[in-house]
Length: 305
Image (cartoon, rainbow, N blue to C red):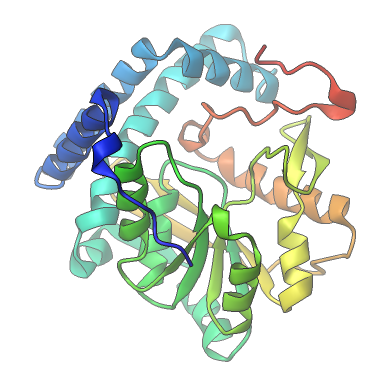
């Protein structure tokens, strides 16, 4: 496993501005949860007003996924999404610096005992979760109870890459970089770590199938079914949701029955179906600013063009 490289001599003004954001995140950890939430919401408003590209992407995603809503409703959802996103950014301070005792007070975990019974009995498990504003906190909370392995990609700022990587692993989780490929992840699963994976990405270079997601044929990674077949791991969907109180709820679902089927399309569709049902409970906390539908069947034009 390679450790992220941090080369400060290459950092420019944009990188230092992200360093200032890290400082703001640290400061927010000192505030009461209500004040931290308000700070996050205001930060999200700034992101929404200052980043027309991401605002455009989110608006298109909401239109594709919620055609039953009128434009006014979707605009309210867009505003609430950016505020949830800002709160998620601010709450990275909990991921990076909160003590185990503070995490225990802030996070309620449903389904923990059933998962641990499987894992401690020697059964391989793979926790799969969508890209939500609380996904980092969910992973860190669970890594306190059982050794996890997960993957992440580098971001442009090497300082932020290192900060994300080191924060996610501070309770013993093993964090692979995508540069390392999938073999180290498989090896860690076979050796007894539980997987923690966010497979809902549209990656042109990866092995994908087109499966329905919110009624849209979506380029979906087939990695969940393949990892389950390779390692014998049971697949347990999970979700992390931020509550209005500033606390978090981590919900681990029972293992998927009859999974994997051996058919990439069926397996990807099953995961997408479970993800969609969980996302609909608090849709503003899904990362709508990402280009989930960029690659289209038959090389059709991207809706974001």
